[in-house]
Length: 135
Image 1 (cartoon, rainbow, N blue to C red):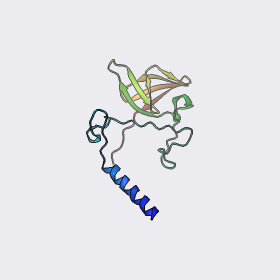
Image 2: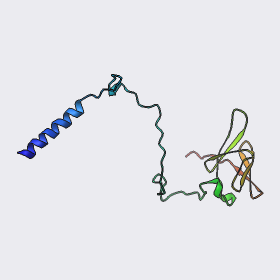
Image 3: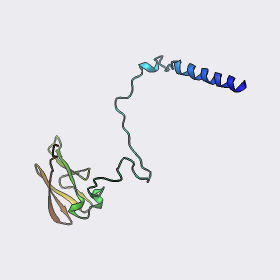
Image 4: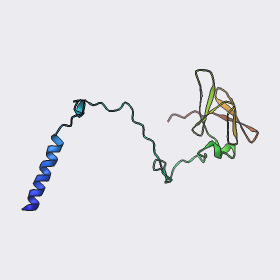
C-alpha cells in the first residue's frame, strides 16, 4: 500500500508540475518569452574524433590547415571574394587568405576573376575555381 501511495503522490506532483505555469521575475510567463534570434553551436571535440565527419565516403585528401601544406595537392580553392575596400580574398581549405598573405609555406600571390596564383616554396601554381555540376 505504501508503494502505491508513493506512486500516486509522484504522479500528482508530475501532473501539477506540467500544468503549472512558470512566471519570470518580470511577470511574463514562459509563453511570452521569445527565444534568442540565432543559436550558434560550436563543437569542441576535446581530442576525440569529430562525429560530424563521416568515417567513409568522399575524402579529398586535402589537409585541414594551410600551415600543413606540403604541395599543391594539399590545397583546395573553395571560393573568391573581395571586401568593400576592394581587397581580394581567396578561401583556401576553408580559410580566408588575403592577396599577398603568407601562411606556412604558401603565399597567395594574386587573386583573379576565376583563379588564384599561389606560391609554395617559391614555386608558382594556378588554381581555378570549379563550378558545381547540376544533376
